[in-house]
Image (cartoon, rainbow, N blue to C red):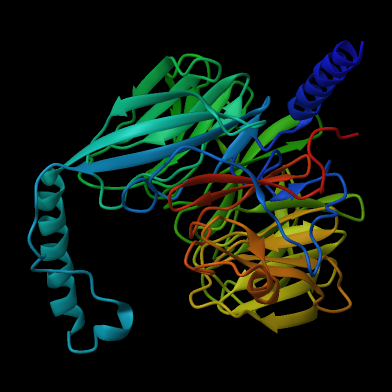
Amino acid sequence: MRGRTWTWMLVLTAMTSQVWIAKGEWSQWRGPHRDGVDLKSPALTAVKPDGVLKPIWQSEKIPSGREGGWGSPVVSNGRVYLFAHQREQLKQLGKPKYPWIPPDKRGHLTPKEYEEYEKNRRDEDEARGKAYRFTEVVYCIDLANGKTVWKKSIKSIYTRFVQSGTIAVHDEKLYFLGAGFVARCLDAKSGDVVWETKLPGEFRDQFMMSSFAIADGVAVAHCGHLFGLDANKGGIIWEGDVKDHRGTHTSPIVWRHGGKSYIIVNAGGNDTVCLGPRTGKELWRVDSDATNATPVLTQLDGADVLVTYGRSRRGGLRCYRIQPSGAKELWTYHGCADKGSSPVVVDGHVYVQGERRLACVELKSGAEKWTTLLNRRRPEYTSLVAADGKVCYALEGALWFSADPSAFKPIMEGRLDDGAVIASTEVHESRKAQKVGKLQPLRCASPALVGGKMILRLPDGLVCYDLAGKLGLRD
């Protein structure tokens, strides 16, 4: 009888776990609403000053950076998806004649000389790219145990930086931009190709980091400029203006208002625009001075507002009250800027990272509530995420702080050891952990938060933590 009882308990636990997993969604870049917030998270009880976050699983080896890109994981229907643009070296190469020169070491070159140097470097990089085999790989991983369910490999081509867009999951389909201006759609259950569409435009070695947004049966892609594709068949429905709708790596968002859907995206260099998803018709445009960061939609006093973030302090952090007829700027905060990091909004306050700072800004007024310095070597590009009244910044480790406008209140700041265990330096020392700080979350990639679990991308794969302090059952 005892054996049968335990068997039924295990079956019930597994069934309950499957139900809980199915509820969790982080189905696109920055979560279900593309704002970096998990609204349905349970209490993250394992996130505490003396906490030790041990992995509950680690995936198979997945290369990153130049060998596999910087895309972020997403979660849908109990599965984790990741896109990687992988390269395999086929023959040995000598040292480059024109290596990349960091900005602080270009002083010996005039602007014209540097322009010529960059042209030569690009030519040389393209020639060296012939020494590699490029493959686009989509991984499907079981959220419960980290095992690979399937992976799809597609022959690909050279780009200056490997492609690094994050997958968008919609109606059991996976949407992403491949190399060479190729938009792709796969079946989420099997990995089979649903459609592939070569987008128009002269391609040489460009790379695109933008993610799809899907609304009203249209998959909107930012690939040099904007395109609207039939989400089911892949045909091009509309094409935006090459100049007015050009962009780099920013991702569009879907705004739903009055029973209709709209697309909002940074485009045209320094603007943020609103378009109809079915027609691509532009409804309004504001000079936001925002570039790579993803805009954030939220509400203020019952009205829809939009938060944008620029790469310079001139652009800064801005807030607009929006209607289908136009947008009105409410305030600008010039206290920080970042090349690509996106903010989060929690309980009427904006939390933002820029340069070596974290700041809290009141959504209603734009007033700075607090700011603090970050102990990071190069804090940039990585976006904040939030759940359970807590905000996480995963770069060189994991910093969790309270979404509290009264003061900066860190909850847990930890580094990873060689086993991917996250804990403070003191706790690691007491555990006698080895090689603390060598293993780090992948720069530019952001965590996925779903139902109390956090999935991080590391340089060699994915790792999952149970932040709620339990394994299995959830409410």
